[in-house]
Image (cartoon, rainbow, N blue to C red; front, top):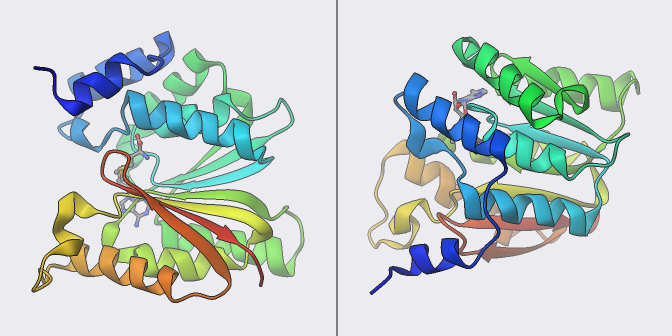
Length: 220
Ligand SMILES: C[S@@+](CC[C@H](N)C(=O)[O-])C[C@H]1O[C@@H](n2cnc3c(N)ncnc32)[C@H](O)[C@@H]1O
């Protein structure tokens, strides 16, 4: 008998050549291939971008660029993705993947701590007004920092725009009673509680892979 995951993969559109290349290189050149978004969720991200038609996207947590490519390939020619990554050793691999996927001109990779990059982006958007607000933000970096990412991005997402957060089921740990007290589980559980209690948004947790919290900002 096939597993549910095998069945889902077998009945969903597969990866492009460039995504296969990124996946292969991630396995060869890093020890953390399990962090890759993967074919099913990647396809879902691409189709979600097509369905919601954002022009400006922000991603927090690039890793080797797999999800960035999925998001960027669905953007219109004048659309743009900013993606934040702390690990500068990944830069060459990320940029090569962007070139191979044909999205290099639509993506800006910002290397550094996401908290610092977000503070800079907030200033450029809210004070200097030299950058547009985002239509979609994809959160997929340090699980301990999800509540802080949410606070930092909320004002730079357009009303009517979306915030999407990955790994919000955290392998089921968020449902355990008592709740595990490690900082990652507390970060994710705190984030989900914060979103559920926020009357400015509408949200739904989608159980694709490790869970995506799909959030729409309905008012400031
Ligand atoms: C789960 S991986 C992202 C996977 C990627 N979105 C994908 O689907 O291929 C998380 C990434 O966040 C990065 N990260 C962790 N803490 C960060 C921080 N404070 N600032 C920026 N990036 C960070 C890690 O280096 C790692 O590459």
